[in-house]
Amino acid sequence: MKRIAQFEKVSFEQFYSGFENTDENTVKQYYINLKMPKRATKGSAGYDFFIPFDITLKQGETYKIPTGIRVSMDENYVLKLYPRSGLGFKYRLQLNNTVGIIDSDYYYSDNEGHIFAKITNDSNEGKVLNLKAGDGFMQGIFIEYGITFDDDAKDTRNGGFGSTSK
Image (cartoon, rainbow, N blue to C red; front, side, top):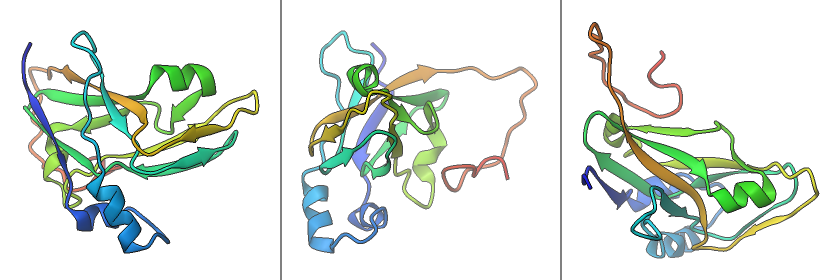
């Protein structure tokens, strides 16, 4: 198996900037208790991401989660993020961008490559989703990719959502 990446925490300052209306001491506890993504079994393709705090999502509700995690990976790889299968099956949990794409150069952005997830409980059965701090809620899979022979991209990234299409 190729080893191509390393998960890390972002700085506390970067993590804290992802919160609104939450006191600093509470966020410090979340930060201290952050769990690094990990595979559940040796045959797992996906690295489970763990929510840093409790949330409850009623049908149709959305929440933006600062994971506190960044990832350094080899060039020519991408980390693709999906809801955990069981949560998708039981609650129709959705990532709002359907599949999260973390490029290798995102690590070097001003936001330290902080991975956020915006999730929605898309249940059409009125189910309420309760996630407790430390529960797995999404999974990431590293995929190698190629480029075209005539590719001449030379720009560098600085930012997240929409930063490469400006």
